Amino acid sequence: MRDIRVVELFAGVGGFRLGLEAASDRYKVIWANQWEPYKADQWAFDCYVSHFGESPNHVCKDIAVAKKDIPNHDLLVGGFPCQDYSIMKKNSAGIEGKKGVLWWQIDDILRDKRPSYVILENVDRLIRSPAKQCGRDFSIILRCLYQKGYAVEWRVINAADYGQAQRRRRTFIIAYHNRTKLFQEFAERVCLNGIKAMHKQVMDDGIMPKAFPIAAHKRNFVDHWIDEIRFEDMESLSMIQKVYLYNAGVMMNGRVYSVEVTPRYEPFIPLGNILEQGAVDERYFLREEDMPKWIYAKGAKHEQRRRRDGSVYWFNEGAVGFPDALDKPSRTMLTSETQIGRTSHVVTDLQTGRLRVLTPIECERLNGFPDNWTNTGMPEKMRYFCMGNALVVDIVKRISIILYNV
Image 1: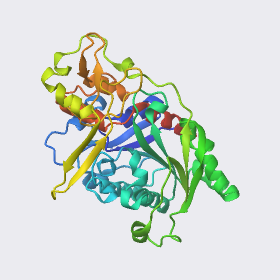
Image 2: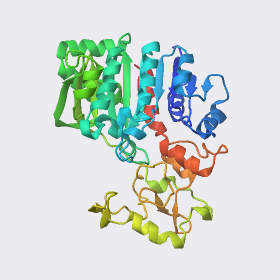
Image 3: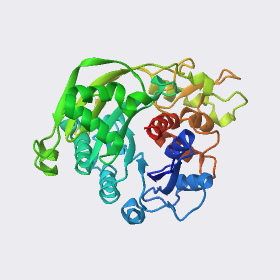
Image 4: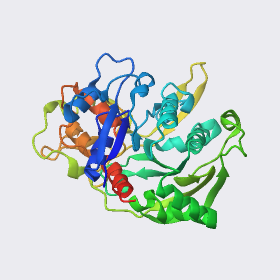
């Protein structure tokens, strides 16, 4: 069997590549790009090349410039920047935001290169972005893929549901071109059986359900069109499209089917299992003088706050576990990990019983990276940042195993 030539976009510290190569040595990354705009130090790229080697095909440039040099390939992968879709960012601008517009760079590459397969990753909110026009951004992405001859599967995957140590929910998109056997067989089933075939692709026949088995689905579903008959052009789709999509779905020839599915749960890895066993440096332990700030950040709130215009409103939020339970999977790790705040993890140290934040190695383990993967000269703060941006390696591995067997 021949090699699968891979191009890796927005490569970060190499999570996609680790997952692919763990699945099969047939996956050969022939070109990769990682570039953080407006940064003098390119720590993530430096980490990438420290593990995978310096090469003219490992490129640290703006993708808008570098894309002209991308070679022909079979599989395009990338965790394209998600800040403009993230629920953690107030008033997210979606596909129109500074980082959301990077979708159009992917679109240009797909138009020019037409790889047989595409695997993309983003935040779970992507399928319902923006809040004021639910489903518009994902519909635009689906329309772009449809126009270039692709069928699409998507799933919102919570890594802990499938045996991982972190409750990290991400949208994974798989597209396959109409010249592939996968597309042609799916298209024939849809031609014969219509929406029933699309439902079966979501539940059983597709790459996603084979990689991440489904136990059940809810009764409500979406049967929708994003083709040129329903929307004459991309501008009309962008202006008026609004659809509430569920956590699983497919698109074939401009028809979209989506349904809410329940995973066939697998035993998760408890947070306590990934903690370092030996002595941990004192700098990771909570300082006594910071405890009031930690207690406030983690606690429930019902308090008056003032808007910029001077008006007053009541702010409410529930408490977060403090410390985090060691017998459950962790909460989602963010780029701000270890900073005093609601989202940072605080654990009971296994040796001393004292409270501390996670170490960089523990954050790497939560995403399935080897220990000290990011210990390549970058500041420790950047190690946390890189892991907060990374994906869970095993999720990519599972998808990749199914893909190379089709």
